[in-house]
Image (tube, rainbow, N blue to C red):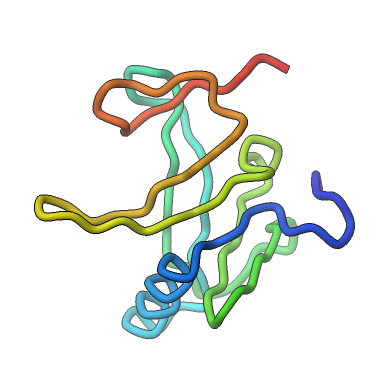
Amino acid sequence: MFGIPGKSAVTLTPIAAKQIARLMAKQGSQGLRIGIKKGGCAGMEYTMDYVAEANPMDEVVEQDGARVLIAPMAQMFLFGTEIDYEMDLLQAGFKFNNPNVAEACGCGESIKFKDA
């Protein structure tokens, strides 16, 4: 919808693709839908949900067995984002390296996008 022909809206690091594929298999889902919603101290938050089927308006990114569906309202905010999966001694989770983010809250759970 907002993409450039021949270029994926988002990219996945190999570890993120492996984790998404593992979660898809474990949940029996057809993919992981990524979106955004209002919330958090910076104004917006990422959402991630398992899906049984793609919405016709979703942007579908498939990489190394992982299938990510980008909700229509999130596509313009996520274009150019690299999704990574990080693990350390205290936590593990997905990290969004998004060039469209102007600032993030201190806890890293919410973001504010650059003005158009």
